[in-house]
Image (cartoon, rainbow, N blue to C red; front, side, top):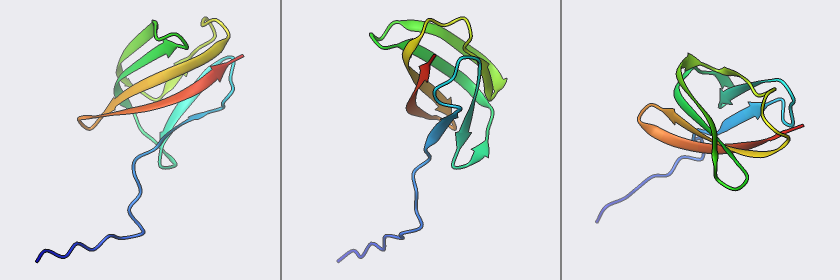
Length: 88
């Protein structure tokens, strides 16, 4: 018999974009901390890639994007996370 203990303290890594909505610079936080990311993909609401960023950064200028809903795919520590934001 195998016993597994589940801790209520375990929380998944959750990316948060602030400010949201935004019209200029956004920052991506993980669990309340600023992290730099190796690769970030931005997609519009119909799934077309708007732009991709590769490097080490956590701030992104979205001022040139069209207004609307965007989905973000973030590669961090060999994992892929998803979140979204609204460009005004």
